Image (cartoon, rainbow, N blue to C red; front, side, top):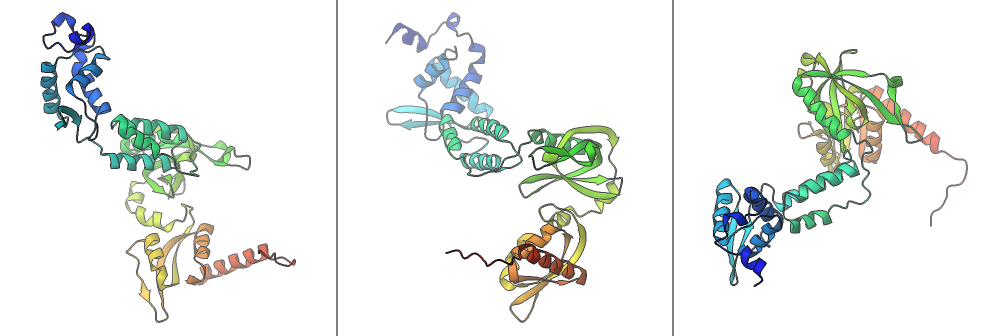
Amino acid sequence: MAAKEATLFNEEQPAERAGRNQKLKLLYMAKVLNEETDDSHGLTMPELIEKLHKYDVNLSRKTGYDDLTLLSDFGMDIISERRGKQTVYYVGKRDFELPELKLLVDAVQSARFITDRKSKELISKLERLCSRYNAGQLHRQVTISGRVKSMNERIYYNVDRLHEAIEQDLQISFQYFSWNVRKEPELRHGGAFYHVSPWSLMWDDENYYLAAYNAADDQIRHYRVDKMQKLTTLNVPREGKKRFKEFDLPKYANSLFGMFGGEEVRVTLEADNDMANVFVDRFGKDIMIIPKTDGRFSTTVTVAFSNQFLGWIFALGNKVKVVAPASVVEKVAEQVRLLAAQYASSSQPTVIS
């Protein structure tokens, strides 16, 4: 054995031979075990001593066993296991199991409201919660084809700021924009600031929305968080507590289609029985389904009437029909006429072979 290795493994190492980072010995030991071990990968005591030496920490076999006991007493699940002729040590149970980390990585990567850059940062941090071997598994499952990610880096911080404003019971102000044909953000209302009282954050169609009280018209309105900019918390108490207390947020969210607002109206629909699953998924199990004698059923639900609602109806084809109220039936019929006129042509239809 070389002189350097002999010194490294000397159980009677004198105090003056302590490494430069000796006072951080337990921290570096925990770091090495967390990064280098898991159920399938352990370290022998000589291997652990060698890896600590790279951090300028010297360790003897005797103190090594004592230090492992200290880390175990502190709460680390350190497993000692005989493998062949050697005893290896590794971290067993962690705060997050590998399947849980994979789930979180998938959620981060697939979330549209998180930009690509922020996704990579978050996934890199999640990888630190497991061994380097398992981190490779997390990295391999990152790719989700065709995912459209947010272009607004501010959303990550907007969500946090909104939570703080709600917790502190304060109003907020912000500018709101939409994308124009040049794919540039265009401020609404001429760049004027919106002043509202934030009450709740909602998640729908892979986007964050803020439900807030607008005192100007005494209405609860919603805004896409990734389209807010210059968001500021105001030193003004929130308003609309009574209005929001009477407000049924889950019911409101279910009434919207693609989070597009509109006049709330009670609509009666008839549908084939095999559409019941679609209606329960959309409106929840509390809706009343009334069976009919012709293999169909009827139900009455509250919706925010919009073109997006009509689009949902049209997508279901002749399996679903709006039957009441008459004003909504007429609007559906009018939209059908407009679409038919838009696609009408005097030319012969093109035959696709």
